[in-house]
Length: 155
Image (cartoon, rainbow, N blue to C red; front, side):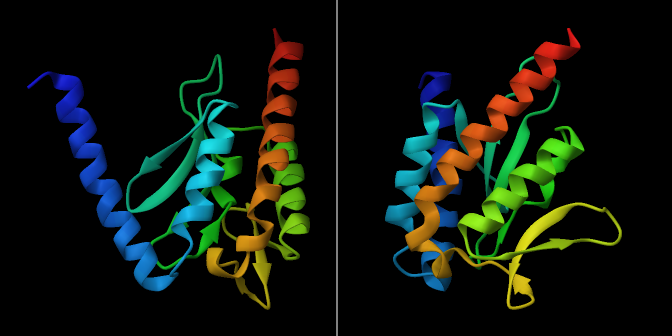
């Protein structure tokens, strides 16, 4: 078997397990979430299936990809990792725009000082923001453009 086929199969096994677990907690979210993944692919954003589904973007000139948000198998949707490999101010602006799009408030973690949208004092859940999910693409687009502009000004 060619190595590409082996890699693809291993990927689909982990993604199948993820989708099954997510659907058990949040029935009906796979279609809208897959549409979002397909829509942001043109921006260079790709899914990475680990313990969570991570939306990643390979930042030019950087060693690590930018995490644009991750969805746990329970449906909890987190954005605190956006600040890990992106300028803090740009990450904050991004998470603010996501919170606004999802009708959520901004929550800052005392330890990491990173932010994520919260609703009613809890992390947002994908099953509660399905209708607003398409609003994530413009927020991602603006964040990527801001990072590219920032990086261009540095060189």
